[in-house]
Structure formats: structure tokens, C-alpha cells
Image (tube, rainbow, N blue to C red):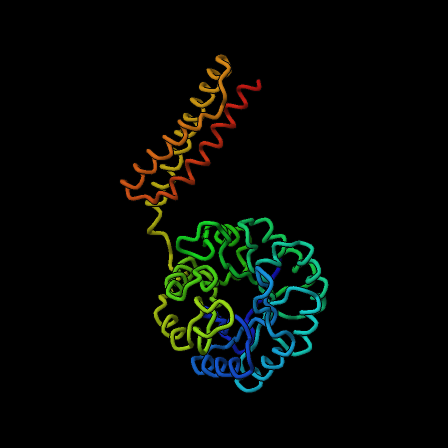
Length: 353
């Protein structure tokens, strides 16, 4: 996949690329006040939602095409580029009519191949950067499929936005980061720019700074952050928006680490990692041999494969041990669940022989 830069003329390539603006364009006054303040802080790309997909009917669904005129005024007065979300072919046509500089495809849309294909067909022949948010569910192949559909339409200026993944577990984040998914995307598509959306991952403004730093530590290319002139009065997602002053403070706190340093000094430690990984594989292979022996015993004694009580006991005990060894309980739970799934598969294979 041969991609072109998503950077617009006059924007340098230093990290992070910053895209900022309100969740929704609400009124012309709100848009212009926010844009002027962000322009004073050095922001080059202004974002605002014109059409807002809502989970339930009755909520604020955006001002529609009228707001595109406000974005055009932002561009004219401040010199900033302007960006908005599109979800239908009509949105694309309207955005182009008003000279929008950058588009993004939302998480709900990227989860629907039919919708992405409709957008791809509407985008054909355009020379415009398009950012694709991860689907709401943690499905890397679905995300890559959306990227490929837009690329196959002739769009070469493509980037992605990591906004986290929906979950019933909302103890900390609005959307779970699951950093390993964008990391794997970067491994498979190394030239694809990745922008982090800490506003939607965190869901609370106090989490934006730490999430932004994590994204920079993972070598993400940019940040898209919701900023509003009066966040507490915002018509949508008020808890995750920050003022332009707070945005400037967050950006000034960021530590941008050098990505060009040599890693030769790590060779000895990496050799140790390789050796330990080999030992882990050998131990896992031994564990699976024991699982097959258990499967044979269950087969001979007409026992069911799944022994729920035993598994619950193992899970609880091992997580407690892991936490005592300074490892995260969720991390070990994920590993044990994968091991258990493979152990069950090994036992079923023996029983069905």
C-alpha cells in the first residue's frame, strides 16, 4: 500500500500533529470563539462535528450543512484547515461544496462495510486526507478492511484514529484503549499515520493528558482532542472536552521521545528476552501435553471436558500470585484465558480421536 502524506501544506512533520475543536458545531458564535482561541495557541487544523450519530434518538444530532458555512468562515478568518466527520455519500458531497480540508470516518461507520463502501465511492477522484477511526468493536481485520476500501477508491492520503473500543466495563475509560491493536496495525502497515483520540478513550477531561503521553510514548503520529470555548455548556460530550488554555497546557507537558536513537545497547537484554520466550514456549508445550493426558483420562472415564469449578479456582489463585509478583491481574487473566482455551481444544481433540 503506497500512501502519501496526510500533512497539509504549511504544516511541519514534527510530532504530534494536533487536530482540535469542539465535539459538535453548535452555534456560529461558539465555533468562531473556539477557533480563534485555538488559532492563538498555534493549532493548525480545526475539527468540529456537523452530523452527530447518537446512540438514542432525541439527542443533539448536529446542526447539519449550515455548520459547514461556519467552518468555511473559520478557514477564511483564522487560516486554519478544517475537518469534519462524514457518514454518508451526501455528507461527502456537502463537505466538498464548502471546501472542507480533511475528513474522518467515525467508529460506528467504519464497523459497517456497506457504509464504508458507500463513502469510498463518493470519495473517488478526490485528493483529500481521510482519517479512519477504529470500529467500535476490537476487530483489527474490520479496521484494515475499511482502510483498504478507501485506498481502493484512489485515496492515497490515509491515516487512522485510535479512539478505543466499546466495552461494558467502564471502570476507568469510556472506551478501552487496547493499545495492542493499533500497535499490531502499525506492525502490519508501518507507513500508516496513527492519531490518538484521548477524548473518546478517556471520556473525562482529566484523563486526556496521560492518554496523550501514552500515545506519544507508543510513537503515534498525532492527537485529535476535543476543545470547546465553554466545555461545561457543550451540547454533546461535555465531560471530555477541554478549553483551549487547558489544551495548550496538556500539549506543553508532553514529552516527545527520540525515535531515531540506536538500539544496539539493548542487544544483550533482547537476547535474554529471546531465551526467556523460548523457555515459555517449551513450558507451554509441556502444559499442553499434560492437558492431552487429562483429555485421555476424561475420555476413558466418560467425563465432561469443561470443569468450571477447577478453572475458577485456578484463575483466582494465579491472578493473586501474579499481583504479588507486580504483574497486572487483567494481564494474567487474559493469558490464562488463552491458555485455558487452547487446553480445552487439546482435550477435545483427544476425546474425538
